Image 1 (cartoon, rainbow, N blue to C red):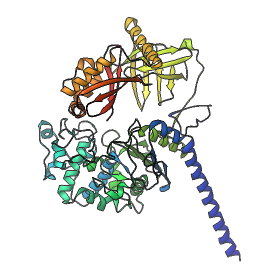
Image 2 (spheres, rainbow, N blue to C red; image 1 turned 180 degrees about the vertical axis):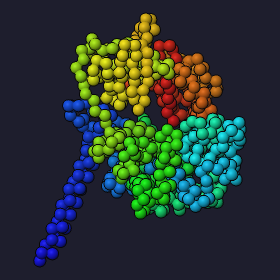
Image 3 (tube, rainbow, N blue to C red; image 1 turned 120 degrees about the vertical axis):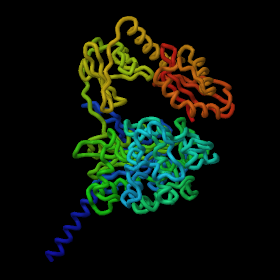
Image 4 (tube, helix red, strand yellow; image 1 turned 90 degrees about the vertical axis):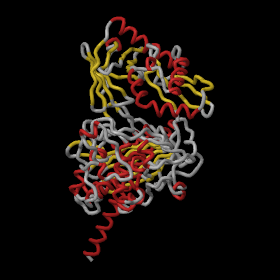
Length: 591
Protein backbone atom coordinates (compact mmCIF):
# COMPACT_ATOMS: atom_id res chain seq x y z
CA UNK A 1 0.00 0.00 0.00
CA UNK A 2 2.62 2.45 1.04
CA UNK A 3 4.88 1.56 -1.90
CA UNK A 4 2.01 1.91 -4.42
CA UNK A 5 0.93 5.32 -3.00
CA UNK A 6 4.55 6.51 -3.01
CA UNK A 7 4.91 5.64 -6.71
CA UNK A 8 1.59 7.41 -7.40
CA UNK A 9 2.85 10.56 -5.63
CA UNK A 10 6.06 10.49 -7.69
CA UNK A 11 4.02 10.20 -10.90
CA UNK A 12 1.69 13.04 -9.88
CA UNK A 13 4.67 15.21 -8.99
CA UNK A 14 6.30 14.49 -12.35
CA UNK A 15 3.05 15.29 -14.20
CA UNK A 16 2.74 18.58 -12.32
CA UNK A 17 6.33 19.52 -13.15
CA UNK A 18 5.74 18.69 -16.83
CA UNK A 19 2.61 20.85 -16.80
CA UNK A 20 4.53 23.77 -15.30
CA UNK A 21 7.30 23.34 -17.90
CA UNK A 22 4.74 23.25 -20.71
CA UNK A 23 3.05 26.38 -19.41
CA UNK A 24 6.38 28.15 -19.07
CA UNK A 25 7.43 27.19 -22.59
CA UNK A 26 4.12 28.34 -24.01
CA UNK A 27 4.47 31.64 -22.17
CA UNK A 28 7.91 32.11 -23.71
CA UNK A 29 6.46 31.53 -27.17
CA UNK A 30 3.55 33.89 -26.56
CA UNK A 31 5.83 36.70 -25.40
CA UNK A 32 8.15 36.22 -28.38
CA UNK A 33 5.10 36.47 -30.63
CA UNK A 34 3.57 39.50 -28.91
CA UNK A 35 6.34 41.38 -27.11
CA UNK A 36 9.46 41.62 -29.24
CA UNK A 37 12.04 43.73 -27.44
CA UNK A 38 14.06 46.63 -28.87
CA UNK A 39 17.86 46.90 -28.50
CA UNK A 40 17.50 49.26 -25.52
CA UNK A 41 15.05 49.29 -22.62
CA UNK A 42 14.59 52.37 -20.45
CA UNK A 43 14.48 51.69 -16.73
CA UNK A 44 11.04 52.32 -15.29
CA UNK A 45 9.24 52.27 -18.63
CA UNK A 46 6.88 49.38 -19.47
CA UNK A 47 8.03 46.75 -21.94
CA UNK A 48 6.87 47.58 -25.47
CA UNK A 49 4.19 45.48 -27.16
CA UNK A 50 5.69 44.76 -30.58
CA UNK A 51 4.08 41.82 -32.35
CA UNK A 52 6.21 39.52 -34.45
CA UNK A 53 3.50 39.39 -37.12
CA UNK A 54 3.49 43.20 -37.41
CA UNK A 55 7.27 43.35 -37.64
CA UNK A 56 7.27 40.71 -40.37
CA UNK A 57 4.57 42.53 -42.34
CA UNK A 58 6.30 45.90 -42.09
CA UNK A 59 9.62 44.47 -43.28
CA UNK A 60 8.13 42.19 -45.98
CA UNK A 61 9.41 38.99 -44.36
CA UNK A 62 6.65 36.40 -44.96
CA UNK A 63 8.21 33.47 -43.11
CA UNK A 64 10.15 32.96 -39.87
CA UNK A 65 11.11 29.68 -38.23
CA UNK A 66 12.57 29.35 -34.73
CA UNK A 67 14.12 26.57 -32.67
CA UNK A 68 15.14 27.11 -29.03
CA UNK A 69 17.67 25.00 -27.13
CA UNK A 70 17.44 24.92 -23.34
CA UNK A 71 19.47 22.80 -20.92
CA UNK A 72 21.01 20.86 -23.80
CA UNK A 73 17.69 19.89 -25.42
CA UNK A 74 15.50 21.17 -28.21
CA UNK A 75 12.82 22.78 -26.05
CA UNK A 76 10.54 24.03 -28.83
CA UNK A 77 10.35 24.74 -32.55
CA UNK A 78 7.72 26.86 -34.22
CA UNK A 79 7.01 28.43 -37.60
CA UNK A 80 5.50 31.89 -38.03
CA UNK A 81 3.95 33.37 -41.15
CA UNK A 82 3.68 31.61 -44.49
CA UNK A 83 5.97 29.76 -46.88
CA UNK A 84 4.69 31.89 -49.76
CA UNK A 85 2.26 34.80 -49.74
CA UNK A 86 -1.21 33.29 -49.98
CA UNK A 87 0.16 29.82 -49.26
CA UNK A 88 0.55 27.40 -46.35
CA UNK A 89 1.91 28.28 -42.93
CA UNK A 90 5.58 27.86 -42.04
CA UNK A 91 6.07 24.64 -40.07
CA UNK A 92 9.11 23.34 -38.15
CA UNK A 93 9.85 21.09 -41.16
CA UNK A 94 9.83 24.02 -43.65
CA UNK A 95 13.31 24.30 -45.17
CA UNK A 96 15.33 27.47 -45.70
CA UNK A 97 18.72 28.21 -47.20
CA UNK A 98 21.25 28.32 -44.37
CA UNK A 99 23.58 30.50 -46.47
CA UNK A 100 26.89 31.04 -44.63
CA UNK A 101 25.91 28.79 -41.73
CA UNK A 102 26.98 26.20 -44.32
CA UNK A 103 30.58 27.10 -43.40
CA UNK A 104 30.77 25.81 -39.79
CA UNK A 105 28.84 22.68 -40.83
CA UNK A 106 31.43 22.14 -43.56
CA UNK A 107 34.11 22.61 -40.92
CA UNK A 108 32.74 19.65 -38.96
CA UNK A 109 33.25 17.40 -42.00
CA UNK A 110 36.81 18.68 -42.41
CA UNK A 111 37.57 17.88 -38.77
CA UNK A 112 36.21 14.35 -39.28
CA UNK A 113 38.73 13.93 -42.09
CA UNK A 114 41.45 15.33 -39.84
CA UNK A 115 40.49 12.78 -37.15
CA UNK A 116 40.68 10.04 -39.77
CA UNK A 117 44.22 11.12 -40.71
CA UNK A 118 43.23 12.14 -44.26
CA UNK A 119 43.84 15.86 -43.73
CA UNK A 120 46.10 18.02 -41.61
CA UNK A 121 45.05 21.53 -40.66
CA UNK A 122 48.56 22.95 -41.07
CA UNK A 123 49.69 21.36 -44.34
CA UNK A 124 50.05 23.43 -47.53
CA UNK A 125 46.60 23.22 -49.16
CA UNK A 126 48.12 22.55 -52.59
CA UNK A 127 49.29 19.15 -51.33
CA UNK A 128 45.61 18.12 -51.18
CA UNK A 129 44.43 19.80 -54.38
CA UNK A 130 44.66 17.73 -57.56
CA UNK A 131 41.82 18.96 -59.80
CA UNK A 132 43.00 22.54 -59.38
CA UNK A 133 45.91 24.34 -57.74
CA UNK A 134 45.87 27.60 -55.81
CA UNK A 135 48.13 29.86 -57.90
CA UNK A 136 51.30 30.80 -56.08
CA UNK A 137 52.48 34.38 -55.79
CA UNK A 138 54.69 36.57 -53.61
CA UNK A 139 52.28 36.15 -50.69
CA UNK A 140 52.01 32.34 -50.75
CA UNK A 141 55.77 32.09 -51.15
CA UNK A 142 56.21 33.85 -47.82
CA UNK A 143 53.45 32.01 -45.95
CA UNK A 144 51.55 28.89 -46.98
CA UNK A 145 47.78 28.63 -47.22
CA UNK A 146 46.44 25.90 -44.93
CA UNK A 147 43.08 24.51 -43.91
CA UNK A 148 43.42 26.19 -40.52
CA UNK A 149 43.84 29.58 -42.18
CA UNK A 150 41.04 28.96 -44.68
CA UNK A 151 38.60 27.85 -41.98
CA UNK A 152 39.38 30.96 -39.90
CA UNK A 153 39.25 33.51 -42.76
CA UNK A 154 42.92 34.33 -42.24
CA UNK A 155 44.39 32.91 -45.47
CA UNK A 156 44.35 36.23 -47.34
CA UNK A 157 41.90 34.83 -49.91
CA UNK A 158 39.62 37.01 -52.04
CA UNK A 159 35.84 36.86 -52.76
CA UNK A 160 33.72 37.74 -49.76
CA UNK A 161 30.51 35.96 -50.82
CA UNK A 162 28.41 34.64 -53.68
CA UNK A 163 25.17 35.75 -55.30
CA UNK A 164 24.10 32.34 -56.53
CA UNK A 165 22.39 31.67 -59.87
CA UNK A 166 18.85 31.93 -61.14
CA UNK A 167 17.20 28.57 -61.70
CA UNK A 168 17.37 28.97 -65.49
CA UNK A 169 20.99 30.18 -65.59
CA UNK A 170 23.92 27.95 -66.59
CA UNK A 171 25.84 26.69 -63.56
CA UNK A 172 29.63 26.80 -63.33
CA UNK A 173 31.80 23.93 -62.22
CA UNK A 174 33.79 24.28 -59.02
CA UNK A 175 36.99 24.86 -61.00
CA UNK A 176 35.25 27.64 -62.98
CA UNK A 177 34.19 29.22 -59.68
CA UNK A 178 37.75 29.03 -58.36
CA UNK A 179 39.11 30.63 -61.53
CA UNK A 180 36.29 33.15 -61.90
CA UNK A 181 35.60 31.86 -65.43
CA UNK A 182 32.20 32.09 -67.20
CA UNK A 183 29.54 31.18 -66.38
CA UNK A 184 30.81 31.86 -62.82
CA UNK A 185 29.67 35.30 -61.62
CA UNK A 186 32.50 35.86 -59.14
CA UNK A 187 36.03 37.13 -59.47
CA UNK A 188 38.93 34.62 -59.42
CA UNK A 189 39.61 33.24 -55.95
CA UNK A 190 43.19 34.19 -55.21
CA UNK A 191 45.52 35.22 -52.37
CA UNK A 192 46.21 38.96 -52.22
CA UNK A 193 47.16 39.38 -48.54
CA UNK A 194 49.99 37.64 -46.71
CA UNK A 195 48.36 34.48 -45.23
CA UNK A 196 48.06 34.46 -41.47
CA UNK A 197 48.44 38.20 -40.99
CA UNK A 198 44.85 39.42 -40.78
CA UNK A 199 41.22 38.34 -40.63
CA UNK A 200 39.15 38.94 -43.77
CA UNK A 201 35.90 37.10 -44.37
CA UNK A 202 36.19 34.93 -47.46
CA UNK A 203 33.55 32.63 -48.90
CA UNK A 204 36.11 31.99 -51.61
CA UNK A 205 38.37 30.31 -49.07
CA UNK A 206 35.68 27.74 -48.30
CA UNK A 207 35.45 26.88 -51.99
CA UNK A 208 39.14 25.99 -51.88
CA UNK A 209 38.26 23.80 -48.88
CA UNK A 210 35.45 22.19 -50.88
CA UNK A 211 37.80 21.33 -53.74
CA UNK A 212 40.38 19.92 -51.32
CA UNK A 213 37.98 17.54 -49.55
CA UNK A 214 36.49 16.39 -52.86
CA UNK A 215 39.96 15.69 -54.25
CA UNK A 216 41.07 13.83 -51.11
CA UNK A 217 37.94 11.70 -50.68
CA UNK A 218 36.86 11.28 -54.31
CA UNK A 219 33.25 11.84 -53.16
CA UNK A 220 30.71 14.40 -54.38
CA UNK A 221 30.56 17.13 -51.78
CA UNK A 222 26.84 16.75 -50.99
CA UNK A 223 27.27 13.01 -50.34
CA UNK A 224 30.34 13.62 -48.18
CA UNK A 225 28.38 16.07 -46.03
CA UNK A 226 25.37 13.73 -45.83
CA UNK A 227 27.44 10.73 -44.79
CA UNK A 228 29.79 12.46 -42.34
CA UNK A 229 27.57 15.10 -40.68
CA UNK A 230 23.91 15.33 -41.69
CA UNK A 231 22.89 11.67 -41.42
CA UNK A 232 24.81 10.87 -38.20
CA UNK A 233 23.22 13.89 -36.49
CA UNK A 234 19.70 13.03 -37.63
CA UNK A 235 19.38 16.13 -39.80
CA UNK A 236 16.67 14.54 -41.92
CA UNK A 237 15.50 17.76 -43.54
CA UNK A 238 18.95 18.92 -44.64
CA UNK A 239 21.02 18.62 -47.80
CA UNK A 240 23.92 20.26 -49.61
CA UNK A 241 22.57 19.20 -53.00
CA UNK A 242 22.58 22.06 -55.51
CA UNK A 243 20.21 22.40 -57.28
CA UNK A 244 18.00 21.15 -54.46
CA UNK A 245 15.84 18.07 -55.11
CA UNK A 246 12.33 18.90 -56.34
CA UNK A 247 10.83 17.01 -53.38
CA UNK A 248 12.66 19.30 -50.96
CA UNK A 249 11.57 22.48 -52.74
CA UNK A 250 7.91 21.57 -52.15
CA UNK A 251 8.64 22.14 -48.43
CA UNK A 252 10.75 25.29 -48.90
CA UNK A 253 10.05 28.86 -47.88
CA UNK A 254 9.98 31.19 -50.89
CA UNK A 255 12.61 33.98 -50.70
CA UNK A 256 11.49 37.63 -50.81
CA UNK A 257 13.08 41.01 -51.51
CA UNK A 258 12.96 44.05 -49.22
CA UNK A 259 10.14 45.55 -51.31
CA UNK A 260 7.95 42.49 -50.74
CA UNK A 261 8.39 40.93 -54.18
CA UNK A 262 9.54 37.31 -54.45
CA UNK A 263 13.03 36.60 -55.74
CA UNK A 264 12.61 36.21 -59.48
CA UNK A 265 12.54 32.54 -60.42
CA UNK A 266 12.51 31.39 -56.81
CA UNK A 267 15.48 30.31 -54.66
CA UNK A 268 18.88 30.84 -56.26
CA UNK A 269 21.14 27.86 -56.85
CA UNK A 270 24.48 27.86 -55.02
CA UNK A 271 27.07 25.52 -56.53
CA UNK A 272 29.39 27.10 -53.92
CA UNK A 273 28.18 24.36 -51.59
CA UNK A 274 30.76 24.56 -48.79
CA UNK A 275 30.28 28.30 -48.40
CA UNK A 276 26.55 28.72 -49.01
CA UNK A 277 24.81 25.54 -50.22
CA UNK A 278 23.08 24.03 -47.18
CA UNK A 279 19.28 23.65 -47.14
CA UNK A 280 17.99 22.93 -43.64
CA UNK A 281 15.59 23.77 -40.81
CA UNK A 282 16.18 25.47 -37.44
CA UNK A 283 15.46 22.16 -35.71
CA UNK A 284 18.15 20.36 -37.69
CA UNK A 285 20.68 23.11 -36.97
CA UNK A 286 19.69 22.94 -33.31
CA UNK A 287 20.48 19.22 -33.35
CA UNK A 288 23.93 20.05 -34.71
CA UNK A 289 24.48 22.72 -32.03
CA UNK A 290 23.37 20.31 -29.29
CA UNK A 291 25.80 17.71 -30.60
CA UNK A 292 28.63 20.25 -30.44
CA UNK A 293 27.57 21.11 -26.86
CA UNK A 294 27.72 17.42 -25.99
CA UNK A 295 31.16 17.14 -27.58
CA UNK A 296 32.42 20.02 -25.44
CA UNK A 297 31.30 18.29 -22.24
CA UNK A 298 32.37 14.83 -23.32
CA UNK A 299 28.79 13.56 -23.15
CA UNK A 300 27.60 10.70 -25.40
CA UNK A 301 26.20 11.73 -28.78
CA UNK A 302 28.78 14.40 -29.51
CA UNK A 303 29.74 15.02 -33.11
CA UNK A 304 33.45 15.35 -32.27
CA UNK A 305 35.85 14.00 -29.64
CA UNK A 306 36.23 16.23 -26.57
CA UNK A 307 39.67 17.57 -27.48
CA UNK A 308 38.78 18.25 -31.10
CA UNK A 309 35.61 20.11 -30.09
CA UNK A 310 37.52 22.44 -27.78
CA UNK A 311 40.20 22.97 -30.44
CA UNK A 312 37.49 23.82 -32.96
CA UNK A 313 36.10 26.59 -30.76
CA UNK A 314 39.41 28.05 -29.63
CA UNK A 315 39.73 31.60 -31.05
CA UNK A 316 42.42 31.91 -33.70
CA UNK A 317 41.97 35.43 -35.04
CA UNK A 318 40.01 37.74 -32.73
CA UNK A 319 36.67 36.01 -32.15
CA UNK A 320 37.13 33.70 -35.12
CA UNK A 321 37.53 30.00 -34.38
CA UNK A 322 37.41 27.11 -36.85
CA UNK A 323 34.15 27.72 -38.74
CA UNK A 324 32.29 29.42 -35.91
CA UNK A 325 32.81 32.79 -34.26
CA UNK A 326 33.03 32.63 -30.47
CA UNK A 327 32.46 34.97 -27.56
CA UNK A 328 31.08 35.31 -24.06
CA UNK A 329 32.65 35.16 -20.64
CA UNK A 330 34.85 32.34 -19.39
CA UNK A 331 31.90 30.67 -17.67
CA UNK A 332 29.38 31.40 -20.44
CA UNK A 333 31.08 30.93 -23.79
CA UNK A 334 29.05 30.78 -26.97
CA UNK A 335 29.57 29.90 -30.64
CA UNK A 336 27.65 31.49 -33.47
CA UNK A 337 27.31 32.12 -37.21
CA UNK A 338 24.91 34.00 -39.44
CA UNK A 339 23.96 33.65 -43.07
CA UNK A 340 22.65 35.74 -45.97
CA UNK A 341 21.65 34.31 -49.35
CA UNK A 342 19.35 35.98 -51.87
CA UNK A 343 16.04 36.34 -50.00
CA UNK A 344 17.15 34.46 -46.88
CA UNK A 345 18.67 35.58 -43.57
CA UNK A 346 19.46 33.30 -40.62
CA UNK A 347 21.36 33.07 -37.34
CA UNK A 348 22.61 30.30 -35.05
CA UNK A 349 23.87 31.01 -31.54
CA UNK A 350 24.54 28.44 -28.83
CA UNK A 351 26.15 28.52 -25.42
CA UNK A 352 28.56 25.79 -24.50
CA UNK A 353 26.54 25.18 -21.32
CA UNK A 354 23.42 24.06 -23.22
CA UNK A 355 21.24 27.02 -24.28
CA UNK A 356 20.83 28.51 -27.75
CA UNK A 357 18.55 29.32 -30.66
CA UNK A 358 18.33 29.17 -34.43
CA UNK A 359 16.23 31.65 -36.41
CA UNK A 360 15.68 31.42 -40.17
CA UNK A 361 13.76 33.94 -42.30
CA UNK A 362 12.59 34.25 -45.91
CA UNK A 363 13.30 37.91 -46.61
CA UNK A 364 16.18 40.22 -47.43
CA UNK A 365 15.13 42.32 -44.42
CA UNK A 366 15.21 39.24 -42.21
CA UNK A 367 18.22 40.51 -40.23
CA UNK A 368 16.02 43.00 -38.40
CA UNK A 369 13.36 40.41 -37.60
CA UNK A 370 15.74 37.72 -36.43
CA UNK A 371 17.73 40.23 -34.34
CA UNK A 372 14.50 41.10 -32.52
CA UNK A 373 13.66 37.42 -32.03
CA UNK A 374 17.13 36.45 -30.76
CA UNK A 375 17.16 39.48 -28.44
CA UNK A 376 13.78 38.52 -26.98
CA UNK A 377 14.78 34.87 -26.56
CA UNK A 378 17.91 36.02 -24.74
CA UNK A 379 15.77 38.11 -22.39
CA UNK A 380 13.24 35.31 -21.82
CA UNK A 381 15.88 32.69 -21.04
CA UNK A 382 18.19 35.02 -19.09
CA UNK A 383 21.19 34.73 -21.37
CA UNK A 384 24.19 36.85 -20.37
CA UNK A 385 24.54 38.18 -23.93
CA UNK A 386 22.35 39.23 -26.90
CA UNK A 387 19.53 40.66 -24.77
CA UNK A 388 18.47 44.31 -24.65
CA UNK A 389 20.57 46.84 -22.75
CA UNK A 390 18.86 48.76 -19.95
CA UNK A 391 19.51 52.52 -19.68
CA UNK A 392 18.42 55.13 -17.15
CA UNK A 393 16.83 58.28 -18.53
CA UNK A 394 17.86 61.54 -16.87
CA UNK A 395 16.11 64.90 -16.93
CA UNK A 396 18.48 67.27 -18.75
CA UNK A 397 17.23 70.70 -19.86
CA UNK A 398 17.45 71.04 -23.68
CA UNK A 399 19.65 74.12 -23.39
CA UNK A 400 22.36 71.91 -21.87
CA UNK A 401 22.44 69.48 -24.80
CA UNK A 402 26.01 69.44 -26.25
CA UNK A 403 25.15 70.81 -29.69
CA UNK A 404 28.10 70.73 -32.11
CA UNK A 405 30.07 68.94 -34.81
CA UNK A 406 32.89 66.43 -34.37
CA UNK A 407 35.27 64.60 -36.70
CA UNK A 408 35.72 60.87 -36.10
CA UNK A 409 39.09 59.21 -36.51
CA UNK A 410 37.97 57.67 -39.81
CA UNK A 411 37.24 61.14 -41.22
CA UNK A 412 33.44 61.10 -40.99
CA UNK A 413 31.71 64.00 -39.29
CA UNK A 414 29.20 63.51 -36.47
CA UNK A 415 26.74 66.29 -35.72
CA UNK A 416 24.48 66.88 -32.72
CA UNK A 417 21.57 69.26 -33.07
CA UNK A 418 18.60 70.25 -30.95
CA UNK A 419 15.07 70.13 -32.32
CA UNK A 420 12.90 71.64 -29.64
CA UNK A 421 13.05 69.28 -26.67
CA UNK A 422 14.60 66.54 -28.80
CA UNK A 423 18.32 65.87 -29.31
CA UNK A 424 19.47 64.36 -32.62
CA UNK A 425 22.76 62.74 -33.64
CA UNK A 426 23.94 62.00 -37.17
CA UNK A 427 27.08 60.50 -38.67
CA UNK A 428 27.97 61.52 -42.21
CA UNK A 429 26.42 59.17 -44.76
CA UNK A 430 23.75 58.04 -42.31
CA UNK A 431 20.37 59.30 -41.22
CA UNK A 432 19.54 61.25 -38.07
CA UNK A 433 18.72 59.40 -34.88
CA UNK A 434 17.33 60.70 -31.60
CA UNK A 435 19.55 60.35 -28.53
CA UNK A 436 18.53 60.52 -24.87
CA UNK A 437 20.46 61.63 -21.78
CA UNK A 438 21.64 59.48 -18.90
CA UNK A 439 23.44 62.62 -17.71
CA UNK A 440 24.40 65.94 -19.30
CA UNK A 441 27.57 64.25 -20.58
CA UNK A 442 26.28 60.82 -21.69
CA UNK A 443 23.56 60.08 -24.27
CA UNK A 444 22.17 56.84 -25.68
CA UNK A 445 20.07 55.72 -28.62
CA UNK A 446 17.05 53.43 -28.46
CA UNK A 447 17.22 52.14 -32.03
CA UNK A 448 20.64 50.53 -31.51
CA UNK A 449 22.75 49.83 -28.45
CA UNK A 450 25.10 52.80 -28.70
CA UNK A 451 26.04 55.72 -26.49
CA UNK A 452 28.01 58.96 -26.77
CA UNK A 453 30.14 60.37 -23.95
CA UNK A 454 31.08 64.06 -24.20
CA UNK A 455 34.08 65.81 -22.73
CA UNK A 456 35.34 69.34 -23.34
CA UNK A 457 36.73 68.75 -26.84
CA UNK A 458 35.77 65.17 -27.69
CA UNK A 459 32.78 62.90 -28.11
CA UNK A 460 33.36 59.15 -27.82
CA UNK A 461 31.02 56.63 -29.45
CA UNK A 462 30.70 53.24 -27.71
CA UNK A 463 29.07 50.54 -29.83
CA UNK A 464 29.51 46.78 -30.47
CA UNK A 465 32.26 46.52 -27.90
CA UNK A 466 34.43 49.17 -29.52
CA UNK A 467 34.92 52.91 -29.20
CA UNK A 468 35.56 55.77 -31.61
CA UNK A 469 36.81 59.18 -30.52
CA UNK A 470 35.62 62.28 -32.36
CA UNK A 471 37.24 65.70 -31.98
CA UNK A 472 35.17 68.87 -31.83
CA UNK A 473 35.12 71.14 -34.87
CA UNK A 474 34.99 74.91 -34.58
CA UNK A 475 34.15 77.90 -36.75
CA UNK A 476 32.90 77.72 -40.32
CA UNK A 477 33.52 73.97 -40.66
CA UNK A 478 31.29 73.21 -37.68
CA UNK A 479 28.59 75.61 -38.88
CA UNK A 480 28.55 74.03 -42.34
CA UNK A 481 28.24 70.52 -40.87
CA UNK A 482 25.33 71.55 -38.64
CA UNK A 483 23.60 73.34 -41.52
CA UNK A 484 23.92 70.18 -43.60
CA UNK A 485 22.25 68.08 -40.88
CA UNK A 486 19.48 70.63 -40.49
CA UNK A 487 18.91 70.61 -44.27
CA UNK A 488 18.75 66.80 -44.28
CA UNK A 489 16.23 66.84 -41.45
CA UNK A 490 14.07 69.21 -43.52
CA UNK A 491 14.44 67.11 -46.69
CA UNK A 492 13.25 64.01 -44.83
CA UNK A 493 10.26 65.94 -43.48
CA UNK A 494 9.41 67.53 -46.86
CA UNK A 495 10.42 64.46 -48.96
CA UNK A 496 12.59 66.47 -51.36
CA UNK A 497 15.80 65.20 -52.99
CA UNK A 498 19.28 66.61 -52.38
CA UNK A 499 20.42 69.26 -54.90
CA UNK A 500 21.66 67.65 -58.13
CA UNK A 501 20.76 64.23 -56.72
CA UNK A 502 19.36 62.87 -59.99
CA UNK A 503 22.26 64.16 -62.10
CA UNK A 504 24.81 62.68 -59.68
CA UNK A 505 23.01 59.32 -59.76
CA UNK A 506 22.95 59.33 -63.57
CA UNK A 507 26.70 59.87 -63.62
CA UNK A 508 27.22 57.08 -61.08
CA UNK A 509 25.20 54.61 -63.18
CA UNK A 510 27.03 55.63 -66.36
CA UNK A 511 30.38 55.24 -64.61
CA UNK A 512 29.52 51.81 -63.25
CA UNK A 513 28.27 50.67 -66.67
CA UNK A 514 31.51 51.79 -68.36
CA UNK A 515 33.75 50.52 -65.59
CA UNK A 516 35.05 54.05 -65.05
CA UNK A 517 33.07 55.71 -62.23
CA UNK A 518 33.83 59.25 -61.14
CA UNK A 519 35.48 58.56 -57.82
CA UNK A 520 35.71 62.28 -57.05
CA UNK A 521 31.90 62.24 -56.69
CA UNK A 522 32.02 59.48 -54.07
CA UNK A 523 32.90 59.67 -50.39
CA UNK A 524 36.22 58.04 -49.52
CA UNK A 525 34.69 54.87 -48.03
CA UNK A 526 32.23 54.40 -50.88
CA UNK A 527 35.00 55.04 -53.41
CA UNK A 528 37.16 52.32 -51.87
CA UNK A 529 34.24 49.87 -51.75
CA UNK A 530 33.42 50.64 -55.39
CA UNK A 531 37.02 49.95 -56.45
CA UNK A 532 36.93 46.59 -54.66
CA UNK A 533 33.57 45.53 -56.13
CA UNK A 534 33.70 47.26 -59.53
CA UNK A 535 33.72 44.11 -61.73
CA UNK A 536 30.58 42.74 -60.07
CA UNK A 537 28.86 46.15 -60.06
CA UNK A 538 29.67 46.71 -63.72
CA UNK A 539 28.30 43.29 -64.62
CA UNK A 540 25.05 43.90 -62.67
CA UNK A 541 24.44 47.22 -64.44
CA UNK A 542 25.39 45.83 -67.86
CA UNK A 543 22.95 42.93 -67.45
CA UNK A 544 20.14 45.46 -66.88
CA UNK A 545 20.56 47.03 -70.31
CA UNK A 546 20.67 50.73 -71.27
CA UNK A 547 19.28 53.29 -68.84
CA UNK A 548 15.83 54.59 -69.75
CA UNK A 549 14.19 56.63 -66.96
CA UNK A 550 14.70 57.71 -63.34
CA UNK A 551 11.76 58.43 -61.02
CA UNK A 552 12.23 60.03 -57.59
CA UNK A 553 10.18 58.18 -54.95
CA UNK A 554 11.08 59.96 -51.74
CA UNK A 555 13.62 60.22 -48.92
CA UNK A 556 14.11 57.33 -46.51
CA UNK A 557 14.16 57.86 -42.72
CA UNK A 558 17.92 57.33 -43.03
CA UNK A 559 18.27 60.28 -45.39
CA UNK A 560 18.71 58.36 -48.65
CA UNK A 561 17.15 59.68 -51.86
CA UNK A 562 15.15 56.80 -53.38
CA UNK A 563 14.82 56.37 -57.14
CA UNK A 564 13.15 53.79 -59.35
CA UNK A 565 15.59 53.35 -62.22
CA UNK A 566 14.19 51.72 -65.33
CA UNK A 567 16.65 49.95 -67.59
CA UNK A 568 15.84 48.20 -70.84
CA UNK A 569 15.62 44.77 -69.23
CA UNK A 570 14.63 45.51 -65.62
CA UNK A 571 13.84 48.12 -63.00
CA UNK A 572 16.06 48.58 -59.97
CA UNK A 573 15.62 50.70 -56.86
CA UNK A 574 18.61 52.93 -56.08
CA UNK A 575 19.19 54.68 -52.75
CA UNK A 576 21.90 57.32 -52.41
CA UNK A 577 22.94 59.63 -49.59
CA UNK A 578 24.30 62.88 -51.04
CA UNK A 579 26.05 65.13 -48.53
CA UNK A 580 26.56 68.90 -48.66
CA UNK A 581 29.92 68.37 -50.40
CA UNK A 582 27.95 67.12 -53.42
CA UNK A 583 29.34 63.59 -53.11
CA UNK A 584 27.56 60.27 -52.62
CA UNK A 585 28.60 58.83 -49.26
CA UNK A 586 26.32 55.78 -49.25
CA UNK A 587 24.64 53.90 -52.10
CA UNK A 588 22.58 50.73 -52.57
CA UNK A 589 20.65 49.24 -55.43
CA UNK A 590 18.21 46.34 -55.46
CA UNK A 591 18.84 43.04 -57.14
